[in-house]
Image 1 (cartoon, helix red, strand yellow):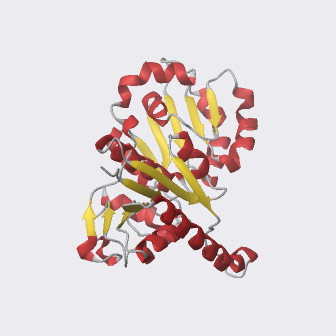
Image 2 (tube, one colour):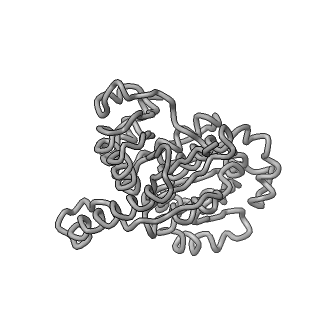
Image 3 (cartoon, rainbow, N blue to C red):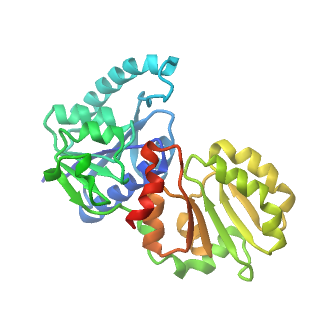
Length: 307
């Protein structure tokens, strides 16, 4: 019997990558012999995180549209799109998928476009309450569109929408049962409160600057810190926490064991990204959400009314 073959694509941020990995994990659970391939953007974080999750990924030279229109990057974009379409067409011809899944971000555009042009069924997964531009474009030819919030017919054809919620990582189930393991993993004391700060996979300038300015207050109040800074802010944060080396104040570029980070924390300070909100709701964590003002239509702020 021919095995089920699935290509998943989406990336640029953890909010697109980790839902795709969660979907892949569930497919493997339901159909153990399924063959799964990822397609992502060369040089972006999915090229590292997907193999770390145990899946093969092929990169294509796609990039996103810059907000400032008249830039060299935007002038190069049409050529990158053509190259990516040609490469994804080749990938599809060689892999012969039964279905393709897009979780958003510009990385998924060429793959799903090439697939739907060949009549291959395509499923979109939209995490946010405000649809991303890539998914809005692809929705015209998609077979089904899985959403996390009601009212998404303002962006997508109503007859294609399935209200499914967001996929979350299976290792986040019952995390509080692993608190002792978490404390040992992060080298934290069980006798002091712990704050977990996550500004998104790419980091958050305002959150990071605020945390850096308030480190002494945390130490003065016997509070421990697990601080995910993102790549851009990591070096500076490491310098800031250096003088608190014996105070359990830790800055990390990326947290690979989010299950243990949640298990250790008493409260979470987080960007209000859709995937983070879904994870926090699923776990039942006390949290302070800090919406990013740099997203389309300020949807992180508006989303707070939906849950």
